[in-house]
Length: 84
Picture 1 (tube, rainbow, N blue to C red):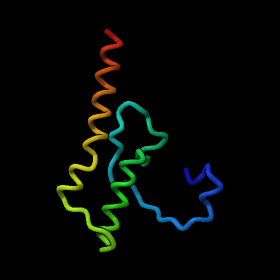
Picture 2: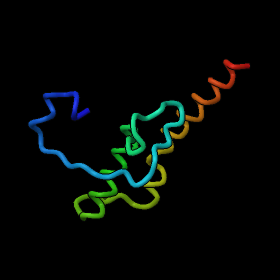
Picture 3: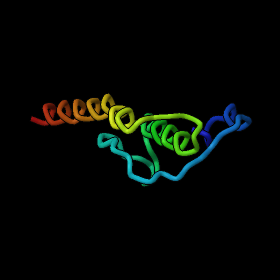
Picture 4: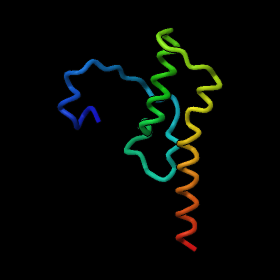
């Protein structure tokens, strides 16, 4: 997104290395280090917690991706259904 949007170039930003692969199973990411938006948001919250700027509890961290996982599972089921 940063590469494509000139509007974002002037904004302050942080970057991070993805420590695990995306769980977005229905879409191939352009590179192994690419994450979905919600996975990236969680990673930023984890870093902000580590830096003591924000607080996300382990329980909140576990629950954060629940809607994302449900969406991926639903989409995989729909794809499987269409193939039968």
